[in-house]
Length: 153
Length: 153
DNA sequence: AAAATAAATTGCAAGATGCAAGTAAAAATT
DNA sequence: AATTTTTACTTGCATCTTGCAATTTATTTT
Image (cartoon, rainbow over all chains, first blue to last red):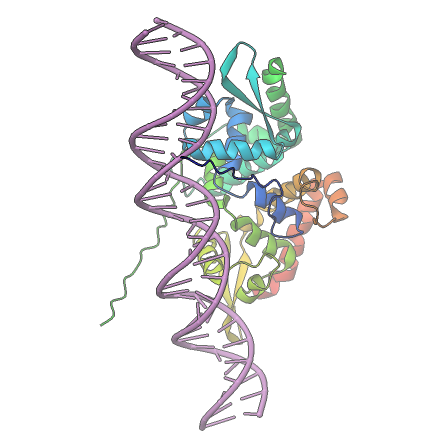
């Protein structure tokens, strides 16, 4: 006889302390969280399959657990397409979209400071525009995301 | 007879691909890197002891390996105080100071989106000022850091 | 009915992090 | 000068996280 143990999912996240920055990193500070957010925000990924097929090649078990975590935190939402019971849609919430400035700053820092170390890094001409008008660029990315996903709400 | 194996330190960092954002996260995307940067930038930590005594309580072996890594990447520099051969000084380089916008954005996102989950999060009145004039605030943090550390150069 | 697809879960291997204890060199105290 | 304390580590082992391959379940397509 098999006994199924019901592992309780801990919604009271374990934070290292009272510092806001450290608390943000208690959520985002790992190998995958912000990569998944980036894939949704600027690479149009929304289904489990989309993420699996991405360049970064996340393993299915990790993806599954990270998506669960992001959903519990309210950073993404999980929905279904009307005529398809198989495919789940993962979409950024406002809380998730509010991460856009962080993604943009990571982009800029990387372009200026990591390019020398990663010889195969892609050169995106957008970064110049991004730098010249950060706020507008951030707003553009968000509006773009909302426009592309509004049909699913 | 003991044989000391010389473990080669891999300066060709393993990146997941050509995306600038993912590459930044290949460096910064873990539990400690940005926490250490934050401690240096806004909590004035500069010696091994300073970091060990911090709220976040990093273990000595982890701290040692992370500092080594940050130094190899050129994000921090390791120096000595003139009349003290024991204490090392770890200071942010320009590359490290350029992370300030990321730290500021993490602060803002956390204040707005993590406060509800981490009940013990500290409320810093600076965040209002930070939001009203981001660029000036970033510049202020950097200038402040440079002013406080210039005596060591 | 059979094959293919999407979204997982499972078991085990490998890597990262955590903890306690120990060490070496320098500095401070006696 | 000898002892103690301090700083910056290293080492060994436990645990937690991530990675990989295979399997599973439900759904959709052929």
